[in-house]
Image 1 (cartoon, helix red, strand yellow):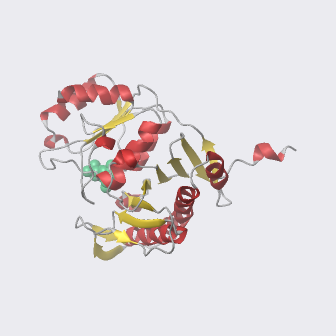
Image 2 (cartoon, protein in one colour):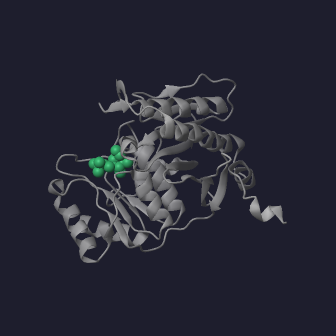
Length: 309
Ligand code: P6P
């Protein structure tokens, strides 16, 4: 039996063959290690409240806090990360420099959409990686980004300048390559409207009406990671979370939700804007900076932009 065709390429082997710098590879790999513990905690642990709240005044689930601690610990373990921003932390965390040459900074959302876990819907970890000691950089400066989707299958998607690749966690606890050089179609057939219709501003109201009139299917799970993953892997489309009358800057955070997903979507041939300007060109000045977002297939992002001009 030719064993080779049954042994798929693992995450570390793929990272090594990709030629990316060892420190960056170890960060991506260690987030993969952390995700296995997060995955386990989610499927076996207590989902109660942690009795604390984050920067946004949101009650932290025990799972949010556990996921944040696990990922923070693994990033520290790499010895190559000097500063991190986490959705669960209220300030930039600095790791003392243990002879860390060529450090990286990481922005991450440990468990985006975590409140969906207790109704058994999919959630995810989102990570942006920068060279140097500043995690609040313009998204275009990212050297890599990734997400882990905890769904019926646990999958890890990463990009570091040379394609976007998907790995699936197998029963042996290994991430094995399942899709390589993922490309988003120029045009799709699904759309995620975001927000609450009564709060829409006129431009977004017209965009949503247009996509409905053109027969796009509405797909919106309440989880950014599964919704983006569907667009990335199932033929394109458009995810939106708009500015509204109650949230002029929208809801999603630039450092650890929008920048990493915009990096991956652009690397896969898609686009991501705030309605007009590319997400990756927005200056990132605050941990809790938000922006409206239109992200997915180039044709649909361009169509939405027409309503803002
Ligand atoms: P809404 C989850 O809380 C999240 O940050 C994203 O994962 C998701 O896309 C969005 O908020 C959903 O927001 O207002 O529809 O519940």
